[in-house]
Structures are given as C-alpha cells and as structure tokens.
Image 1 (cartoon, one colour):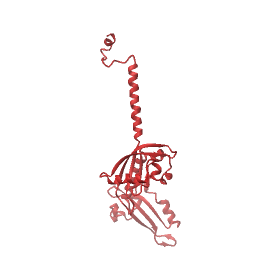
Image 2 (cartoon, one colour):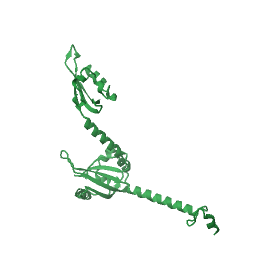
Image 3 (cartoon, one colour):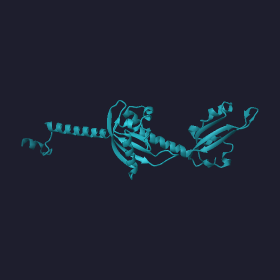
Image 4 (cartoon, one colour):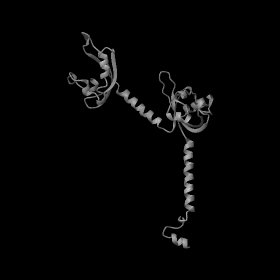
Length: 251
C-alpha cells in the first residue's frame, strides 16, 4: 500500500487488520465469509487505515476470490482506491447541512435559470407547513404570494447584475394553510456551471418580524419595570442619593 507509506517487506505476512482503524477492523468479515461460501462474487467496502506515520486514510476496498483448487478459494484479490478527499468533502457537507437544519432562518437553494427550487432546510418545512416532497413540487410563485414570473426574473437579473452578486428583498410568503407572512430575504449567487446545469444561488430568509416583535416586547418590559419602580413607595427619587434619602423625604 503505497498510500499507507509502508515498505513491501513491512506488509508481507501481516494481516490488514494490523493497520486498520479499530472501528473498521471487522467490518469486512461477514461479507467476505459470504463471498468465500459462494453467495457473492465479490464484495466492496469503505474503511479506514492508518499510514506508517499514524495519519489516517479512507479506502474503497474491492475484494474478489482468486483461482480455486478443489472448490476452495486459493486466495483473495483486493483492489484499494484512496478516497480520503471525497470522505472529507462529504463530512464537510454534512456539517454544513447540520448547521443549515439547525438554523432558525429559512434557507432555500434556487436555480438561477428558472428559479426552480433545488434544496432547502428543515425550517422551511416548519414555517411553510409542507413536507419535503411537497415543497419540491412547488414553484417560487406558489410560496411567494407577491411574486410573479416576471418579477422573479427581474429580481434574479438584479441579483446577477449586482457587483457583489447579492441583494435583499422583502417578500410575502404563503403557508400551506393559506396564511401569509412577510420576511426579509437576502440572496447570493454562484456562477459555477457543471455539465450544462444553470448557476445556483442561496436565499437565506431572516424573520424580520420576529426580531421586531422581540424588540417591542423588550421595550414593553422596560416600560413596565420603570412604571413599577415609579409607583413603589420605597423607590428612591432620582435626585436623591441613598445617603440623602431620608433628608429628601423630610424636605
């Protein structure tokens, strides 16, 4: 295994479990037993190994049986392909996905060419009242009650024409039950294209009304506390320090 940086003499005669990750040492056993019994022609796995320097690598492992003598397998042939970078990208994507789904903001991914909905986080389902599969069948105009195909095209044109490739709009969204609410939306675009696919942009939508409501509630609480202090007989007049409080009362 060149990628594991072991010399050939260090590997010959040893079991691959000697440099397998502890959690993956036995992961191939059951499928290889089935292969040896003739149930499977070959087996494929993804597992972790340790390099000679102690660092870890991911490997796609394909195992098949060699020539047989008297019906018994003579040996196994294993082909290993390093997939460390792919696994790292998958892990980073999963972390990103987890962060999106834990966000209180609605996050949409649209295709720039036609505004088609490509993906979204769990908050979208919760706020709009649709299931994941139901949302994938909707158009932007089904979710945004104040948007037409023409206004959507104009909005995307403004987005792509912006030097920062971003813009902010306030739009009215329609829930499954027909009720509506207005949220402030910030949009950003990506110009990448792969295999003829259109560009994509992400639309994080922040609940402006929610923030305004919290601010209003906080202001109301402050006014209530101030009013309660003013009515309290033990409240110290603003012009009197604690030491002069009694003198102020006498005066």
